[in-house]
Image (cartoon, rainbow, N blue to C red):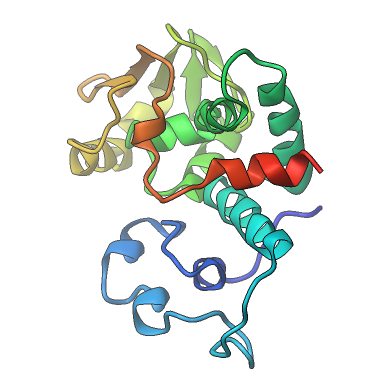
Length: 207
């Protein structure tokens, strides 16, 4: 399935909550879901009772859009999490949180996950001293992520990090002076920003 390229705010309206896809705009009165908190389209304001299938589908789509992952990747990550020890739903969220584009965003080195994917694609980051330009690259505990030396000359990154201080989750550390971050623990379920009922996604893939 191709990546969605339309207005991203429509995705938030479709799911009925902020997915924080537009960075700073999501925290202002200009956020469309603040002004039009109903689904887009001609029948968006109509009330519709969802079946169990519909509830599971909406939860899956919400999480997939939140992390900006394709349908194929999403299913692959669930299959990976399902084979791990522990609770499948929590493992699944940990895998999604471990993507390089998400980690870059969590460190405050990008204003949104979409911007983070673009910056990673353009080769602005290094992992353990080697350039990585694959947003889906999975990070492990102990890995060090840093802005490439040539890119540190841009004031953009330091401005982003300084504005993001206090919002960095406990499983990562950020060196704002050197624009370098380290994974100090596995992602925590409590650090997820939006309400997610992962058991619904487990039920969806368990059919």
